[in-house]
Image (cartoon, rainbow, N blue to C red; front, top):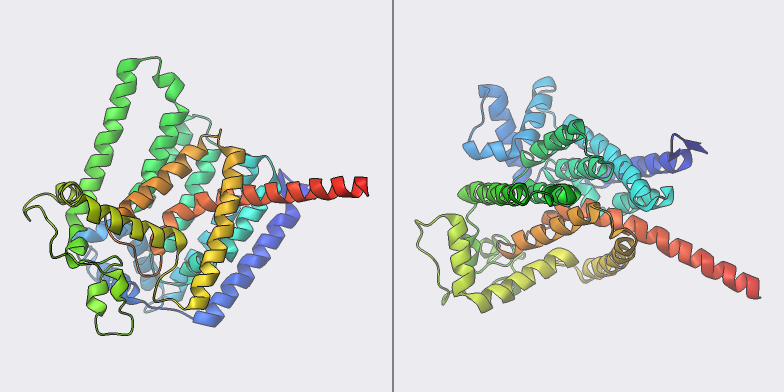
Length: 392
């Protein structure tokens, strides 16, 4: 059965799986208030009480703080309504991925399998039930991908995408990665038009580079990542765990002989200076950070959990490759590659996090590819089965 291009059974199955997964999450973990969660709630309560942000850097997390404060105002001292909002938005995000996969691969099964992978990716889907910013960032990235996949160049479409990008930017600073991906997509989409006028082409490229530079500079005003290099951390704030059971000496390196720029330099200049004057150290440490990001493993995880992650991620990347090989001619591929490269680059010049939250910007695009790859594998299996059946 199909309804307006949508397989009804696919949607029903995804809804049931969404309900079961989130039911298990709430049953298993309940409502979790992590260290950062408590800080977001505190900022939201300040906004409710005073009608303004507590600190200027709160603007980089304005969307989640405003949502939390709204629900805290409607339901005093309650956080469950905000978590329900995250779960519901994530459900719509699954629908957006479904429609995106269906469009990119011209097959509803590709979208369905992308939705299944998205829901079963336990290390990411669980953020829906935590008071953090990752869930909203992931959901709105799915919405952006949906609009880009169906983009036809209309002004209303451009305005809608711009609104979504603004929302993403004010969910968390790493939203800049998604913005870069969208700009790369639009540049690729309009390239033939821009190529007709050299002045127009280079003006647009220069404008985008300036936007990227000032956006990065704005973000680095409040987050000086060189400090983590100075502390020798591979994982953020690992030095503060020394003496505890969570401390891992392998996640710190000797920083005594490193050369740093003067403190009064802009943060972006300090990063570039550090890379130029400590090339070997930077390559070694940045490679470790990117490895931990893309593999998901951590030395302080159990052997069983790390083994599960390696098996899951290996299978996922195999499916990604298969999906990419089927969709590499589409503009959305430019978006996905830009997001992956920009996110890995951001981790390389800063630090990887404790629980791989920084993987979230890449997740929707990777899941989209994996859904197409899974569909391709199933089709290949069916063809081989038919071949052997015909021979025997």
